[in-house]
Amino acid sequence: MGMGERWAMNTDLLRLVQWLSPAFPTGGYAYSHGLEWAIAQREVADARSAGRWIGDVLRFGAGRTDAILLAHALRGADLLALTRALFPSAERRMESETQGAAFATAAGVDPQPLVLAFAQAARTLSVEHETVVALYLYSFAANLCSAATRFVPLGQTEGQRILGDLHPLIGTLARDATVASLDAIGSAAFRGDLASMQHETLDVRIFRT
Amino acid sequence: MNLPPSSLRRLEHSQGEAHVRMKLQSGATRLADLRQQGSAKAILPRVGGVPEVVFLNTSGGLTGGDRLDLSLALEGGCHAVATTQTAERAYDSGGSEAVVAIRHSVGQDGWLDWLPQETILYDGSSVTRSTEIALTGRAGCLMLEMVVLGRAAMGETVGRLAFTDRRSVLRDGVPVLIDPLSFGDEAIAAGAGSAILGGARAFATLAMVGPGAEDTLDVARGALDILGVEAAASAFDGKLVVRMLSHDGWPLRRQVAKVLNAMRGRALPRVWQI
Image (cartoon, rainbow over all chains, first blue to last red; front, side):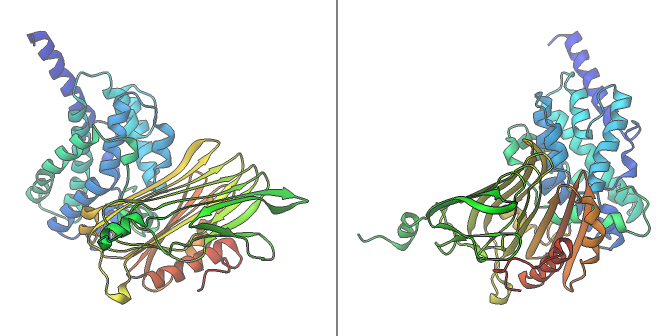
């Protein structure tokens, strides 16, 4: 690989990191994916329970589902109807559509659910799909860890340790997603989905979901 | 022939299919066609009002290698309720999977209530089930799935499981609701996690898709109050989705019955003993 190609690849990677950074105007900080309800119930009350909740949602819920959708969308599949049909609740729909619209405006792609808007933008880059999926999952996990750090609350070091402990899982999910068929999409995060429904009627809400 | 019991089980796998078609005749929904073979049957008990179709699996449960195909096709304008005769039990599969395919369709302006009784999954069971309801135009449906992991009263625990259960509703060929459940050994091992099942052993999803579905949210929420059941409802995109879970099948069943009564405003299928 020549210097020029390496430089192009690095700028593509930097573009991905920028799109997924908390400073990019996607607005991720406003969404907790139902975690706020679990915190309000004291089901998530410390670093251990927060790490487990986030890890389970990644491994058995939306993390794995989005990873598979993203891997297929990166290869050009039209997944708009499927992605929308998979929304488990009104708030999870809003979380995906609103962030997707905000991301699309800033990144210059079509408004659509976040995972697909991100895929459309990332498709133009020369970065391995496995890396793209891993970074996307990382940003999802980092946003939830940040929510837990602020509102459980946890120490910043504790919050970062949870995120660090999820790296191997994120790597595995990204690798598996690049070879999984769409039929492999399936969730066991029943109470994670339920949490997003319960959140709709939570009295005091800081997060939009 | 002398065979060890495990080999016998593999040889005795069952196969069945039951396909029902209903049409509108003088303003009423009537049976148009019924085909059945093997271990699957469909019966149409005499009921007043909206007709009922009751499917049954005469093999007594699902085990490895079994194949079950059920369908109810409602032509335009038809309204019907479909259910199952009893809970479906899935036993230790002996290594291979049971496959269940349910394919209902509802013609223009029709409505189907698909209200099967619960599926009880025993330790070691392996089931791949797909339920698809294809709607045309302004047709609608109510779709229920209740799953129970073993029987708490019998002290059963489920540690090994391969259960994938994909529920889909399509409108004019486009997916509008997909609820794919997947519980393997690892998910079951993580079942105590509060994002998974929180230790619950019985869970249900009820979805209404079609005209008026979103307006039913308050009625559904108002009926989610059975003790020992955790439940919530959400309305979006022309759908109402209700999720419920409990430590055991019985409270869940009572909750499902209560919310169904509230949403439908009429009695449950006769075969539901509650």
